[in-house]
Length: 509
Image 1 (cartoon, rainbow, N blue to C red):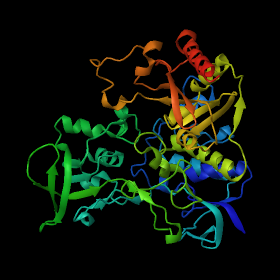
Image 2: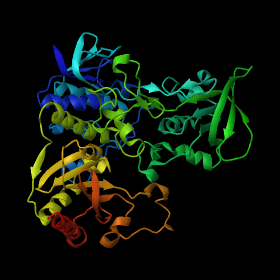
Image 3: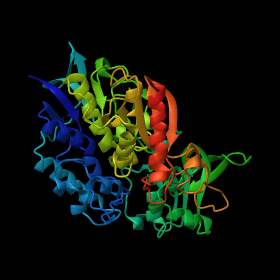
Image 4: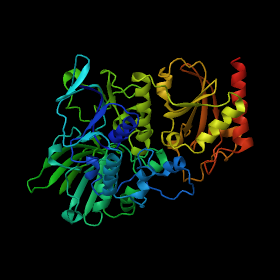
């Protein structure tokens, strides 16, 4: 018997898709290499504290709004399957999340086959073949499971983030180099500041701070204590440049040739007791036969995908979860649970539209300007999906009042919903240069909140309503910034939006 859907991986993305397919009575099976859900999180992060926030108290009783501050819960109709019931810590232990995933899979009776490692996926005669299973469609939700090893001569002499000791005492009085400038590198450095004699963190690019870029994959404040030790002269340093060679010394230590990025110095010889690679992860494409091998992009770290999260070269091969960050790489949140849970729900709806004659879920509002404006404002003040997937997911209101929630903007633009002669498309977005300014520098001017006339110059997160005719944007309206993110002031938000919609509908005839 041929399955409709074979899902590879029972991490949060695979379980999220399985829960939606199970709810709708679809034919699917999840294969998981490990003995339980969330095998990745049983090991990572190595120092066992998540950086996905778990803010239990928000002052609101609206479950949709509260998901804005809950970055770990998956989507279901069961309120007991919210992560707040598993931990109250703002940065929770990874082991609590592993326990949560096991309960999520068990209580929803998801169809998962554990201890089943997929060694080969092929495509023959219109179906995918994986061992003794065949499927019309495969959804890969394995995440980025293979450590990325940069092409540095001698890299094999370094230890790896995925296997290096996490006991700080093992580094007592040693000189340590950590290659990489992401959260895994600084997580490791922070763990060693109390025991290592010297720690250098090195990489060719500048350190990017998440609080400035608004990309949560950049360095988080919870991991940046090491920067304090560097700037306050504690024998630690951040090196900007490239490691060009690693060599073993006669005394058993390690030496590197290092080329600085910001000086005219020649190669500098630096010596260490230990070197750790913390250079990120990549997609493991080794399971694919040539007949089903997806094209790769971004230094071969991710599969290339269409706006429907489908392989660009293998029809029927889809991706879910962290792998879909290829669509918004280092810009939005498809690489993280609080973002991809909505991306997975969008994928589920795309599959329904494409393969089950199921239209995108919708409601109907009165097609009058005030009613459309009220519906948009009601949603932007509580939605978590548009809040988390800023600039990526949108609510779409058609001219006849049909209201569709959480449509990927690129999918709409590519004609995924068919011919759309006129649509009001609402996203939440930062200003175009939001990541170039220090938000704590009070000498940098910014527009006043609730200034409707200057709304288009807003740099902080705010609603943007664009008018689409087919794939073309023909008009655009910004709602003014608000300190509390309450975009519901009649004269500042509702009336200008209603006037904008009225003008567009009048021009449309």
